[in-house]
Image (cartoon, rainbow, N blue to C red; front, side, top):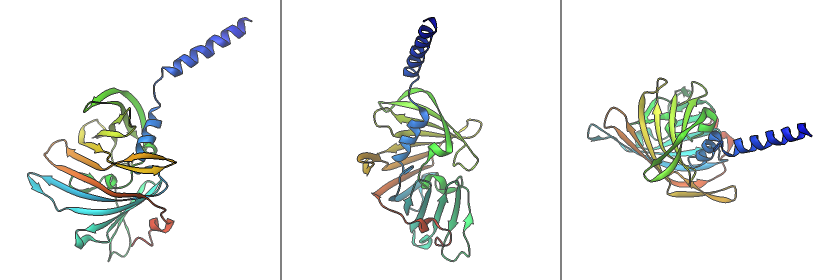
Length: 245
């Protein structure tokens, strides 16, 4: 009888502990990824990039992105002289291809693509695969209650070593991110808007419409607008190096 009572007490204590443990940070991260193209079976969108630094506007760019769960390809549409250039990302590897190149060039997702946007910012977001998340507390961002996640890279092929990520408690999407170096130095800050919705798994979910990236040391800023978002089946050869030249 005593053993049964002790077992029951332990189970009750465990249940109470789990009930107060708070949300699973990795689950929060995975859910937030979907609103930025991660973990989806097939999605297509256009990105319009506009950058400015030192009071001067950079050349606008437009790309079409096709993405699946672990792969994406971003093809430049404008400016005309770069039309047909592609950023191909498959799992943790990335290449650049363009008309006239004899073979794809391996590149890093950390390289600057345009203004404050890195190559990895253009690809679909799959933070849940690339980062280990821990819950660092709760804060309010522009009047919205958010869980604060600390993300640490699982490998060296990530776009950033560390990210501090604010995920909306009511909407389940990332509303703010701070991109950090290994030592914790702030590099850039990003803010996200979600004016789009897509149909996924029998329900409507929000999808990113705008990402604003600010440099931590200069006045440099890049705005990425996401347009014409649609769920679409993507053939596997879209991510084949031989087909992407």
